[in-house]
Image (cartoon, rainbow, N blue to C red; front, top):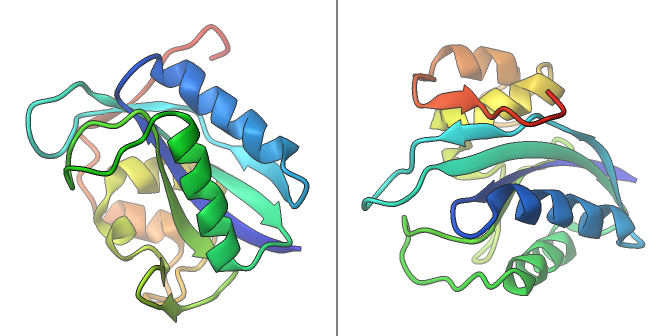
Length: 163
């Protein structure tokens, strides 16, 4: 089974419930196992005025090839009412395939590693929590090293009853 990393985010509806249900759906998928999940982080939204995001990352094990995994992620987004309108607009659910083993892939529909991830604290903070030593296949730096190069001031641990 291949190991991959995904980012999860939501800023519309009951974001915590949406994100936790998403993890359950993924883990119940026959060809996906959720190996680990970060804590949730509150993040100041990028773009037009909108609510803060809840963000996190998960490590998955899967038998799906990257393109099929992406299709699965997009279907889950749609289950939660995701409509792709604005690039930086609010959303009920945003799922991004960040890393897939050490694969570098560039097609019309999918780029791995996810291109903007190296500059996004809302991705690197939770990813460093669960995969600090994963080497980014393009930069050849560990996730924890990439985190050192970004401003994390807009990212804070989201307090739940479990943490």
